[in-house]
Length: 160
Image 1 (cartoon, helix red, strand yellow):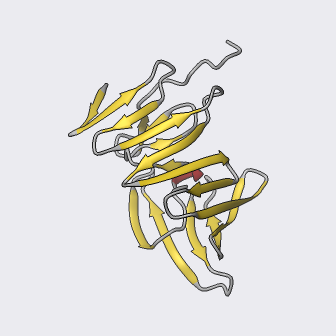
Image 2 (image 1 turned 90 degrees about the horizontal axis):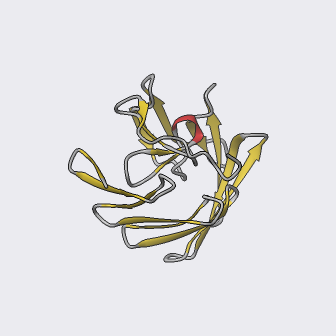
């Protein structure tokens, strides 16, 4: 268990966040992929990076990529295009008509500089998930944009 300000964070043996004070919990499969998030009375299941389902609300979100770049997402029936910066961070999102839905700007190490509207995903700075910990989830480790550094070591994986 570690603390980040007043927030307590529980880690498992492979160095993954499993729980955060305030009620967020995370579940991983045998390969270390996050498969479930319980937060704020909501339960979200992740099948892979392309598909997630909020089982509390029944809303399915499908992500569309061009190579490694997130280009769009469909949340329920709403389609949203994601426009990224040179680091893969979500900057602007637009709807099917081209109207701006949201915009985000970042400081050099990922802190939010400005935010307008609501992006339909938690994939923000460098395209990574910003979760209930306030940390960016980089699949193998966690990054704190306020500190500008990773706060967990990368796992060695199963082949090490």
